[in-house]
Amino acid sequence: MPLTAGSKPGRVPAAFVRRMKESSLGYLFLLPSITLFGLFLFYPLIQSVYLSLHLTDPRGRVAAYVGLDNFTSLLSAKSFWNSLQVTVLFTLLTVPTGIVLGIVTAALTHVKRPGMRLFQFVFSLPLALSVSTSAVIWAILFHPTLGILNYLLKQFGLLPVQWLTDPSAALPSIALMTVWMQSGFNYIIVLSGLQSISGDYLDSAKIDGAGPIRTFVRIVLPLLSPTLFFLSVISVIGSFQTFGQIHLMTKGGPGGSTEVFVYSIYKEAFINYQYGTGSAYALVLFIIILALTAVQFLFVEKKVHYQ
Image (tube, rainbow, N blue to C red):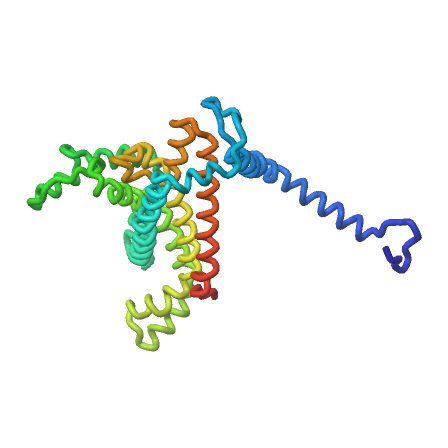
């Protein structure tokens, strides 16, 4: 280490000691978070990789090393491709609809009018409900004979729908419930993005003679694109990790029409007691989500207009 003016040979500079103390203090503050990440994220990930290369007995103990056989058998199974197809369809049904609903509700309540606080509370209310509570509410709505949805269809002279027992209606029904469950979060995120947009842009557009729809499409939406990009990434990840409402409402049925990817992991590991195959499922899901997120950042982010 080169000597500076006023320093003695063999003596550590005071600036270096100060930086070391600051770094040590920073790592000390990070230690609780690093410990939690290690216990609940990194260790389960390493354990999943280890189990995916082995066969296990019903107690979860390693029985034999099989290498990549779990992955090859997984990719050749019809159940894997069915769950992937169901998950992709579920994502297409929920993510765009949820984002559009969040934009519409946030835009309607962003204006300063009397009573807007009440509507803001109502639109954000689903965020406060748990999955189990939402499942009870929608199970009543979906009831084939006593549910309000079939009652409304009957009033319009339409035939009742078997919402959760018809293979063609089960997944759209769960998607409808999921859009409602996520509407509170989407609404709050989009509303926060709208509130962060400076009013000078809107005043300038009004002076130039732009109408409200043109202003919203040409000015507000581009300025809102960072918020929408964040919401789309989070929504896609969340849709691929959906489990609670599927487990409580349909358990993957009828006929596998609602068996999303995470429920296949649960069924393989905790119903069939195949922890090795279940771990392989989980790693494949991790790779799929990582790839989708990378694609969004590589291609979709180019259309984001940061202020």
